[in-house]
Image (cartoon, rainbow, N blue to C red; front, side, top):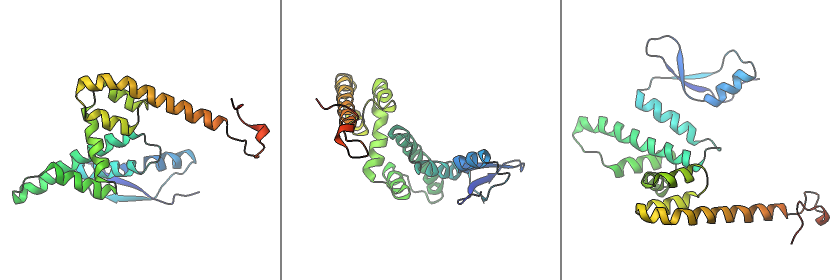
Length: 193
């Protein structure tokens, strides 16, 4: 039993031990199988770079919800702006939001529109944000709502929740009516009406 990809660690400030910045799930899995040591890459990163590395690692997870992805992307944009300001302060160049967005899209290997949508979600009213985080509306619906004013969001949110619920029910019914794995139509999961 071993680990294919090492975890990434950072030496603690007072020199006593290490803290992981990427690979938490691999570390937990290694502990579950009883590994006493794991391969590590020791990085010499600043606070911003360590936070970025951790977020980039999380964005690779397949089980992240769209709302979690958006929150991670927004945090990356904020960190990138901070980093660019620190770097820019040396040469006196102002940092634009556009430059940070473009840099995050390139480094995270995602589209610019994905970053824009993640940022737009901040404009959702509290109820719409909760519905998005709970999966009651889709990412596309959240982006559409975010472009509306608060009153319009209030009016449209219930309609979108109902639309998502209808689509989920339709999908569930079609999956239930699908033939069984053995291909025998007599063994369907649900009777067709």
